[in-house]
Amino acid sequence: MDPIRLDKYLWAVRVFKTRSDAAEAIRNNKVTVNDATVKPSREVRIGDRIAVRRQQVTYSYRVLELVSSRQPAKNVPLYCLDITPQEELDKLNVPRETLFILRDRGTGRPTKKERRVLDEMMEELRD
Image 1 (cartoon, rainbow, N blue to C red):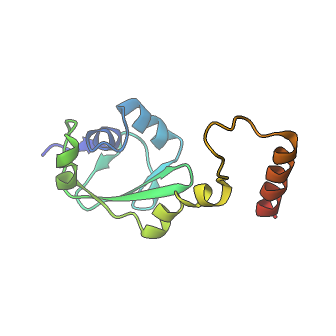
Image 2: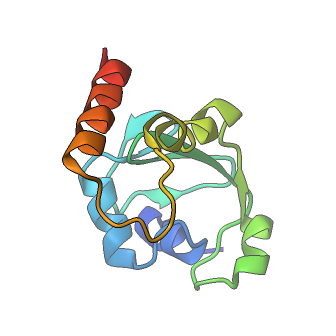
């Protein structure tokens, strides 16, 4: 099969919504291949390890097959294996667990007194 550009491959296996989004992330050094920064035009090979950093999580993928056209979501596992460690995925839940404060539905905005209590709790979490 013909060589495939990295930006096109990431778009085809649905890591990014558009090819231009993939190219921009690669140019901003948010994507590495085999632990090296690359350009959007870099050719992908079978067995390459691709790391994509989004917010605080770094997703890792292994290239199984080359594909140039965008695939349906159900076919993506044929071309790309998600090898993201569980520790990275756990980072997604940390902010919600530490910063979420339960309020009854329909109670509206907090009063001044409630706001002070919330601010104190938030400050204790930061310290």
